[in-house]
Length: 508
Image (tube, rainbow, N blue to C red):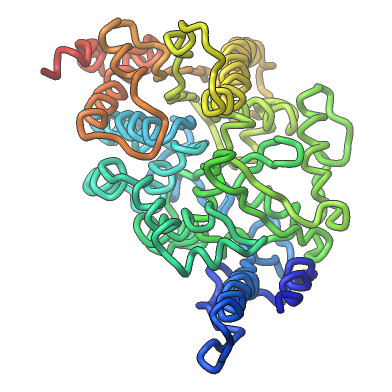
């Protein structure tokens, strides 16, 4: 009776003929209304029908093929130059929003609010510091405010709290998974998982069906680079057209919700999301940086990771997990991209920047220190705690290394800028400087505030009180950072360098 199920699960999927995401509504493959069987047989028939319905229904194609490669097509920095989006080349801000669930979302949003409250005068124009935000690298929980801001701009300050931060997304997701019979059927499919349901929820309740193509049409910065992790190699997978060129895929047609869900697909809690590799079908010509040997180990490693996608026969599918597994603070991409391209000068030439006077790296990280109180008893930790440790330990260690390497790189880049040869054409102005602002929870100094923030879980459900504390923390961490003070002073705004009192003084 159920022999068709085996054939269904082993069937080879022809991705070229599959519907674009989301797939069409379910169509039954068996009719139960005419079945006349004894009770046991009827139940067996119903059970097989449920399996077959799930198998037949869900074979989503998450990403569309690119008909013809064009180096000037799609969602890439050269198509959104700063001068045409209200920002400038000369003050170039690159932010990174870390992973860490809704806690990371709230902290990043608090920093965005403070940037919007910071008035500056630049090149004779009055504006806000947030108007000079050019690029956001976002991971997992940080992907939600980054994407919403790129899509809706200042509207984020009107409704993001209501639409995302003060909403119980875990409850919504559980309801869709466990209380929806149609989703029970869909989850029987080997091609559909919990992360797809999360993507649908985000599509309906937050991103309103928009795609990366809508960001191109909007024609406003910041550009967002959402990061997921390639399950095969745990290398970083970026949602930008440069990355999608390699797999001959059209990012413009991909829903923003799919990228955000991929970036947040934490193992065990959410399933991976798969991309189809169409490499070799669009005429893509790999740039020299992918073919030629790179001078640094990081550059060679990144080139090898990207080259692996060029053979679609060996790598027909790319299974994506939470971006935090490969770079939870979002700054490793800065280091790896610079190593791949060659140097800082070449990197910003690739981005199309011109005459940068002030280059600002802003790191917003919701990472916290481990809670040692969980291990004070002489008991073997349970499966839940062990599973969490398997994820948290490498992420935290990796992130610590990234922050140290970023600090070292900033120092080296400053020296390089100071020792440039006179008269040589450069994307950097002669008096260019680099700033590294660290708005991270690890920088909290007040013990009471630190304990309060560290106790906030990294899930997708915050209380109103937790949201309030995180928003204030984001504002305070930014305003109290020494490099932020230096930037504001160099911009001629001494009034904004007064530190904000501890968050605890703002709350009862």
